[in-house]
Amino acid sequence: MEDYCSETRAYFTLFGEDFPVEEFTREIGIIPTEAYRKGEECIRGKTKHIRFETAWEYGLDYKMTNHPEEQIHTIINTLYNSIEIIKKYKDNYNLKCKLVTVICFNRQQTRELVMNNKVIEFANQVNGEFEFDIYNDND
Image 1 (cartoon, rainbow, N blue to C red):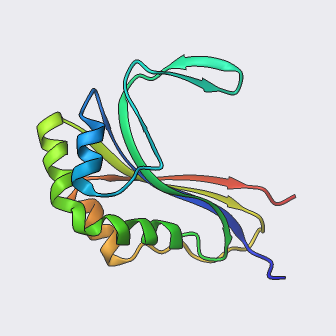
Image 2 (spheres, rainbow, N blue to C red):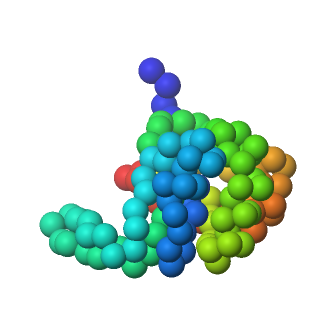
Image 3 (cartoon, helix red, strand yellow):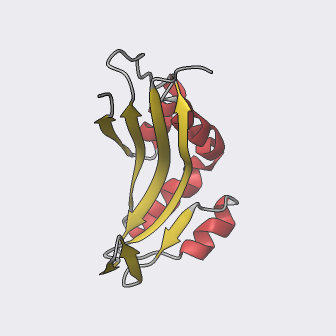
């Protein structure tokens, strides 16, 4: 059994005040892993909250890996041909977007985190941000 250096999750999110999530889903042709509207109730832990924004997310669940960037590369490969649709909705509804990678390192020494040119170009084209949530679980 391989000793992986990290457990990683990644997702793309398009979010803002309000936009037609169902229409965006139809036009982009990709089923979101999560979508919600501003004002909807949600439960976090045992506490009820009200959503403060509308969002459409597409991502991959946690995976043990030695290459934490693999998941974001997979997401970009799925979304890459939809850049113009994403830009249209961003412009029409004043939305923002970001690419999020959550990394839980399991060892002190890890491999590099590499964002390839395609990922960087995608983020630049949609004027998106990168967010890296990094945790160290080695004891």
